[in-house]
Length: 334
Image 1 (cartoon, one colour):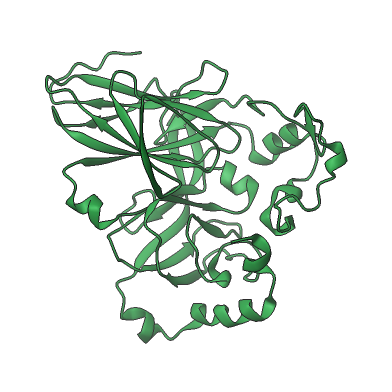
Image 2 (cartoon, one colour):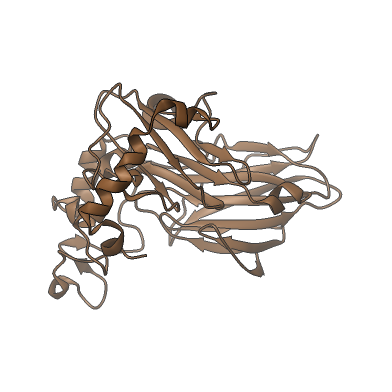
């Protein structure tokens, strides 16, 4: 569905806005989930870093929905600045889509807003639709399980990728864009073809310039690249079973980094892209662009061991990742 048809008619927006103000008694008939936009602290190469995040009622990053479970979420902004969250991969009513002022305003500090719609199954994510906020790690997984996920004899593991800088996000954006405004990259400024407002005459055929922005495989050299909020010197170690099968849900939530996901010695099968099942594709190395999601089935050898799954930064040496390890396996430093 194009951006024009989704957001082009204010009358439709006003009608769907009613779902945000439905009586509390009606909303209470569904088990509701709490979600908070909040501040948190992570460790980046031995240095404490204050970032933002989206935490559920139990303090975990993101949300996981069971098959058929409605998206019934109360989002609270505990930050000291207004923000708004977009449900990437979902098709909510227009008023709940999360683009500032199209048509709903930003969520003010201390404000709670209710969201209610039918969830689309698959591996998705959620993030602020404000570039500086998203770069500040205001993003999290949004997993909607299918009945076959419940029935399958396999473990599910999420690999959530992000790029990180100790510099303020506004400073990073200014360096990436050469001082140009990021407004042209916001959906609110895009037309049906997603490129309205950009001068096509400034787009060089070699991909070296687009509206004044330098274009390359990597637009910026970040201070660190994260997998589940960790760098590779202190990776997330996930315990798996010998001879077991697992579904790796890869989410590239980075601001400006393309990765190659490499499962190493573990045979893999790509079974879904952006939440949609695909004809299985065998392999051990799959590209994932910004905002993209991959579902990869992996098989652990019967004799067990420790198996790194790395996300290689395109045309570079940096590589975040996690370690899949069976009980008692030695996890050595890469």
